[in-house]
Length: 623
Image (tube, rainbow, N blue to C red; front, side):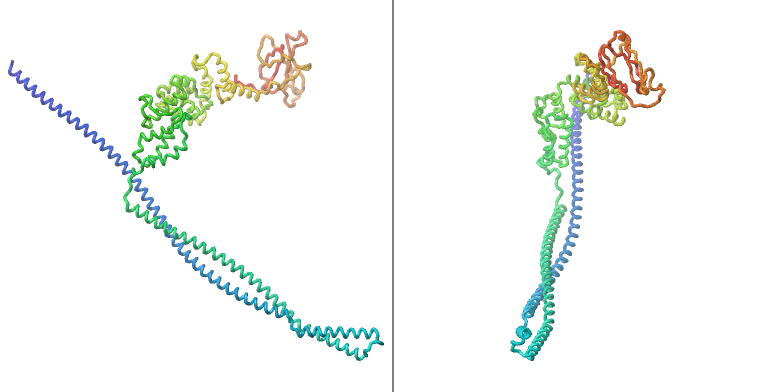
């Protein structure tokens, strides 16, 4: 073997060893790099978590500062209120002292009035008892006058037998005059006494009125004193409460200023449940009464209300448990059927499970969904809300790429073109773009009316033949007629559609018996209701009768007598002709109407059966 070749082999071996060592070193370095990258990622997560914690703490600090400012403001207002209340309390105390002085003064006045009243009563008793001597004197003088008058009367009646002389009679008359003068003098002396009695009586009445007023004032003052004392007690209690409130606020400020900030994660899971329980109680349990996405949105909003508490224990699993607790009936238990019935631990899994369960329970398999989706259309009677509410259940659990082509086919051409230009990627984007285009058109289908009507009228013909039997073709045409007449109800109910069409015809053209003349000799039992149809094999000669002059042979616009008369209703009837000569060319006389009816085509009417004719003013193109 050549020496150079051996050296080359040894060199290659050394180089391979060095290469292997370098490879091992590179592997170790890559492991270290991955480890460092992992540590760096962990550090970044820690930093982001600390940043979020700092942000939360800063917001908490701002909230506490605002609370301290509010407490200081309340304390300042409370101190001002205390000062005002103290000044008012001093005023009330002074007012109470003044009222007590007034009560004492009134008591003294009452005592004086009562004593004066007793004196007046004594004086009144004295005046009411006249002195005894004047009364005896008056009685004596009265008796003397009566006695002397009796003697004088006897003297004048029988002068012969009376033992009195003339002088005695004159003396008795003098005594009578003297007694009368004495009585008059006593009466004059008693007149001032009577006046004094009347004056004292008036003074007594006045004093009694003053006493009553004083008693009333005293009672009012007592009531006012009680009211003021009760008000003073209430203000005093309020003052005590205000001072206690100030002490409590100062203690709270002291605690907030000296104690460290609490950890935002100190709230426990019990606080979270206490926060969300009232809203969960209001929300009814889910049993398929509404689409899954709307109910899931409500549950998600309730869970988000507890995010501000920052409880670490309220993680994805707990949020999912809250959502699963609202499932009932056919939607319980909540387990993942695609993972060996494993428990669902995230909100997204709950939403996916709700969609699949709703599709399986309420609608059916995917094939049935696609068939139902193919039969739908965006008609002129639809709004965005009604269309979305009707379509949403069909697209649950189906890939967006498979659903969007069917949704494009629902739209009229121009609307479909605009939606395709927007190019929505998901079903939600499709409904969003459709709503935007709908609002741009003014919330109306007027810009797409012809296309929507065309789409609605072609609805039945775009459905696969094997989906609808051949016998429903007449119903589909009837539905098309009802849509043109403005029907907005259930298109799958033929009874409702027939009732709507019948009511519309009755409203526009009247009932069957309207404007029908009876035959002069009784009604034919074989009368049938028919509409005017064209039969060219038996034409009927039509002669117009003028409605102005009543003559046959010309119309109203060519009448020589141009006078307006009220419009009349066309009354027509036909029965079997008596003469067979008239069968070949029957003549019908029509009264002339408006110019609109002058332009109508002449109609052929069968002369073998009685006809019912409706009063038609305008042509309605619903067929």
